[in-house]
Image (spheres, rainbow, N blue to C red):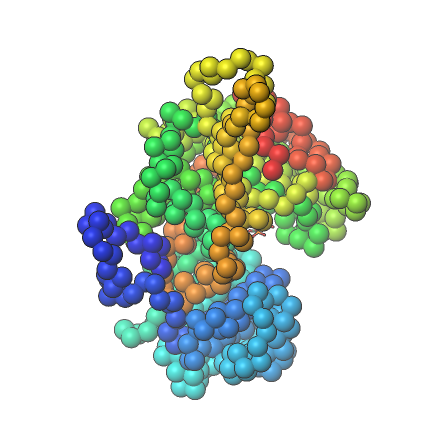
Length: 519
Ligand code: BG6
């Protein structure tokens, strides 16, 4: 990784030299002078995640004195008005405590530019603002443009940045563009989108956000797999029966119903977050943690991944109906404002994938996600085969399941190992027990928010945690056939809010003699 899991290599049996590559990787990385321009500052993401993350970085001392935050939107706001918006967002959503002195310093670099995306004059004003910041704050011509806007607006904004001369810096400065998902709605549209972006920004200046990669627990998969000797020998088809990747949410669509209608669970999170989790779980060890090496391994494993067929048996989709979340009565999807009652868009999706490599041949990867499920939980469960022989009386092992290693991505971040143990007493009865590692207990530092890590990486020009063009396109290539199959007929199966999804998803597993975990 950027900050230094960077393998010490074969010569590592001697003392590790922390200054390899010219930098002590144990020291915190601090961004150089620059500005971050956010398009879409009036949106939820900017208010709840981006602005608070910028403050948290400032609070941790990871932003330089010469830093500026520029908002661009169609609002009649002054710099001060925008400053108040940022202030409120920070007070409400930042992870770290509010400190007046940190805020004072940050707010000195806050600017606002009023305009619409198709207004060339607004981009000229943006250019002037950035030039002034270069002088006043010493941002040195280094500017990152964060497009937290609907994908339909990407082409216009990219063109405007290009026409106004903002897209390319000079030899001594950099320009970068950050784009939020969704990256298209299928392979074809993703290709078109990538072409538009790459016409203006060279690929190495494009940072595609998949915020799951910014999560500590997701990066810990790399540590777990490649820093230990314990797991690798059994991380393959000889020992693993199957892998379950679950991303369950306990809330419905609420205010996002209008956006979500027509997108659905598979496009919203399987195409990106869950396939990235699969890639990191299933890939081979990278030669090093240099970005290109990591990407090479992810690309290899995504190229080998395909949907299992027939889809009628290997996949399931659903829509939540009214139900209970704990003691609270919650709405069904069709009652959500902005959602077309006739729409077939799925809020639950489960698919089966095959990874055609020597390591994984014959091991199904089950991916599922849903809104309004029983609990909020994201986990990767590697479920092992049963022991080939049990020298116990059959009645003694009735409560023995399959061994499993569960990476708990969130909440309650950590790792659980499940295995059989003797029940105390005079008989040789064996039952499942679990052994837990919990981040909260093992470390005193709290984990940064994903967006803190990713925004810092953008400002540092560190691309390891950002999927490249090819990964995005491969992910669509994997998913397109099931999206087409679902679009061609049939309906999403109902499931009651607060449960674990439609019955068809359970049947999908039962057909293979397996069952979903109940996290
Ligand atoms: C986003 C999806 O990418 O991830 C949302 O668009 C989802 O639908 C969100 O709710 C979940 O993120 P997290 O970090 O809360 O698991």
